[in-house]
Length: 114
Image 1: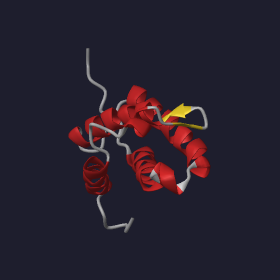
Image 2: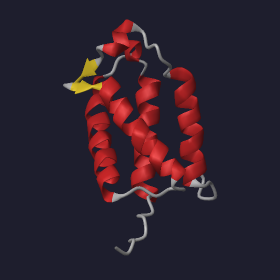
Image 3: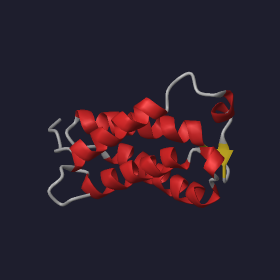
Image 4: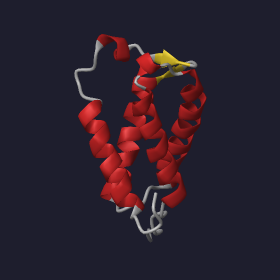
């Protein structure tokens, strides 16, 4: 990523690419897709929710959401070396980049008064 690029814009672009490629209904093979003990459809779903929230909040995600992103990032890092060309590795490399960008560029939400 160029230092002049806005991380929120980069993640939004990557999500758009992802949404074009990872569309429902998924092929049956992907619905039961597990690598290195990780259910990749579940991983994608959890990250998608966090990405949506992060983008909607202009690059801000609360600590619970960040915990999910960090967990997913670790799982993707376990999975990447196990993927073959038949596993659509570009999808999972893109999600890895998205998770890394969110972890590196999250702006925690301001505390709200009760």
